Length: 198
Image 1 (cartoon, rainbow, N blue to C red):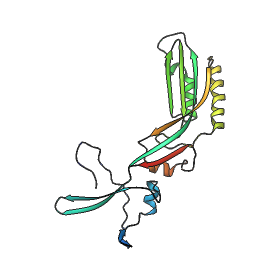
Image 2 (cartoon, rainbow, N blue to C red; image 1 turned 90 degrees about the vertical axis):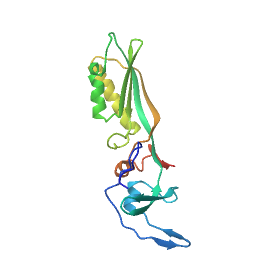
Image 3 (cartoon, rainbow, N blue to C red; image 1 turned 90 degrees about the horizontal axis):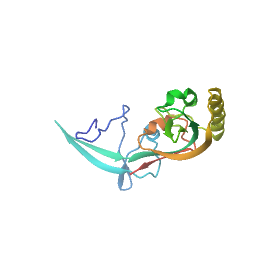
Image 4 (cartoon, helix red, strand yellow; image 1 turned 180 degrees about the horizontal axis):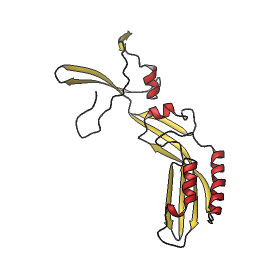
């Protein structure tokens, strides 16, 4: 099935196709899922799926048996750094604090947010591992190193960081292709949990 018609998002067929053979097991017929597909979709023995018959009639009547895996969900436990900077002028933005962007770029921050409130800029920097590519998960030691360099770069730029904290929070991702995780350095990390939800 190349694509379905209608307003909903189309299904996209993977480029690799395998030939299989239907076999008998007791009173059922079975087919083997090649290991390459199992790894690509991160599926496991005992996982529940929905099996449906599908038909298509163009010039010929065609049939297909679809195995619906569900929605792929990823829960990531990420580290973050939060702090405040006193400001004396209106309309300040990221360009006024180049050291923040420098640290974010150097250490692969997955999110940076600046919010002005009561004469201060509240900054949150997130260091997860899910971006366009999958990064190596950060350890607490990595974050401690980032904090030290952040403080050094801020002081060098003439800023003092107030209420500096390291925190952890869980983020749920619903749009990650399991193939990214299968190829990335996170499958055995305790910072990441992933599962199919029907």
